[in-house]
Amino acid sequence: MQPWWNNLTGYTQAMYIIAIASSLVLLVQLVLALFGFGDNVDIDGSAPDAGGADADASDTGGDMDLGAGLRIFTLQTIVSFLVMFGWSGVVFASSAMPVWLQAVLSVLIGALTLLGVAKATQMMMRLQSSGNLDYENAVGLTAQVYIPIPAREQGTGKVSFVFQERFVECDAVTSEAEMLKTNTYVKITAVSGTLLTVRRLGEDEAMQAQRSAVPVNKKKRRK
Image 1 (cartoon, rainbow, N blue to C red):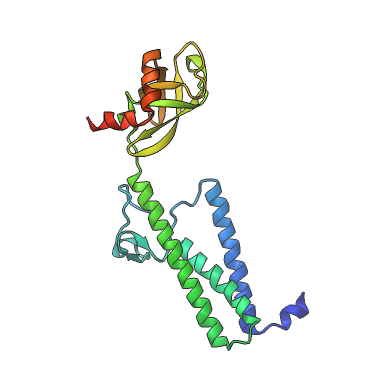
Image 2: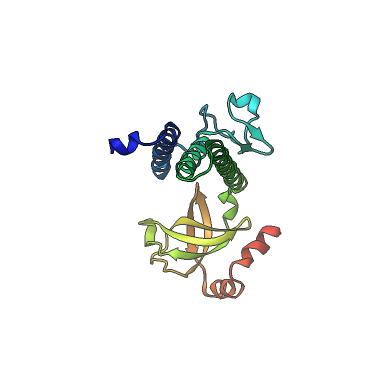
């Protein structure tokens, strides 16, 4: 291992160090995100405000904002830049290209990756901010059981329905004496946070809901 390392040029060694170190940081980020930590973490620890919009660069003390919430310099984007910059440098080091061209191409690939990650993050933040649902408005809508709901509120199941132009799935309970099986049509009677309380539709209501399916909810919201 040591002879191989010693035979590398200083430039190639630097690329390996950058690539490996940044990849380890990226791996840590992925693990933290998997367990729900580190969301929306920037260089200075800032985060979007409650309305989902990003602060200006002058207020964040470190982030660079371009346009509507396009945050260029965050921990995620810089780590992504370093990963692609480092590994591109390692790959190009085995070519016959001059070192300056290797460096330029590596920077270009890293910059494109940085912008791509920034744009993807911007799009996700927009979806998150515009996708906030007020489930209180779902009371009275028709849904369909997705995962069976135990009787007498002895456990939760799931229902699916179209709400605010989105197909959503929510946890649900029922006070019915019998379990609500999959595909049963139900009406939402109460909401607690994102937990819905539902009841089984009567035979006539169920037939009507089955004929009109979910679009009946859209018509109801427009009234």
